[in-house]
Picture 1 (tube, rainbow, N blue to C red):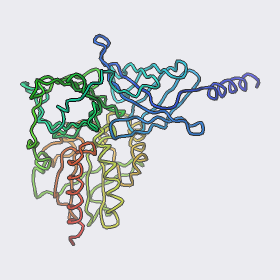
Picture 2 (tube, rainbow, N blue to C red; picture 1 turned 180 degrees about the vertical axis):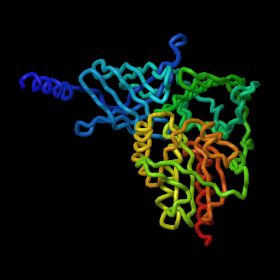
Picture 3 (cartoon, rainbow, N blue to C red; picture 1 turned 180 degrees about the horizontal axis):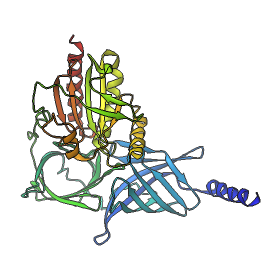
Picture 4 (cartoon, helix red, strand yellow; picture 1 turned 90 degrees about the vertical axis):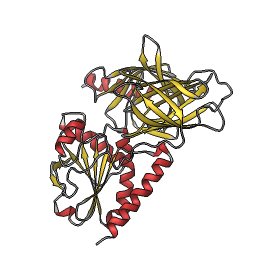
Length: 409
């Protein structure tokens, strides 16, 4: 009996003696050791009555991480929604070294991580008088002059006429969420880390256009981009990209919820109800933004006759892991509508499982049904709160449609 008690005492003591500095830290993910290319971001460490938490900063976004384990020589923490985690060694009380692990990937799923206390700067570039060149709306081409080229809208803004810059890109399948960075020596530096995506954008201009842009997503993806200022440029209508093969067809599907109960759109629960069908995944940051919005919409309109069904296409074949990920998402945003496990992954499988659509080209894709379950709109992608006016326009349009559908007998 003495030995186990002694081990327990040592374990408790190591937790009690562990210390780490509270306040702002600068972190970096090493995308390329060869080029010493790093993706920086900032986080804050808080200690409230012995409970350690982290708050990750991306422009106006704050992501609270509360699944944190601090021992005498390490700090490990799991991201609140996505199936990723950090495993780090603590050097003193102000340096962390370790890895970020993305469990949704089977190969090359870890990136070297480093963080140091006390540095509030995201990018370690010289701070000079800004030119404000990048302010505005940009017609953007990713992978220009290739078969994979695609259009986007870049929206950038200097903060309080300083070198600090915030912005995002709108695409036809979603947005790049909250980007934060700076202008230095005429070049643009932006990054975002949200627990799922690790984005780094670099840009140079020739006085009138962005002629050289680099986009890195983690260590495995790189593509070029160029842009020209164009306030009038628009992407394709997101309600025109995904549609019913037969406009008169009533849709239906059968999947299981997290309690292993079979759920169908034809169940009595949904009869004579306006229904939103959300095609999503817990791994998808745009789906996260949409889920946060739809959770509020459901609470506002449920008593008026609205139901929402989320169809989850997870990136794991492990049903229990998929359930855990979805329940964490549900808890985070207080989701009270049904989330169904399809057991399938990817756009191709999603398209096969929903044959009434011309295809699924983006997560999320959202279907709006009237009380007779006729499709009134199919919306591809989601413009989240980082897009500003685009997000506001979407919420106004969506709630106008819901009011119209709910008011009809």
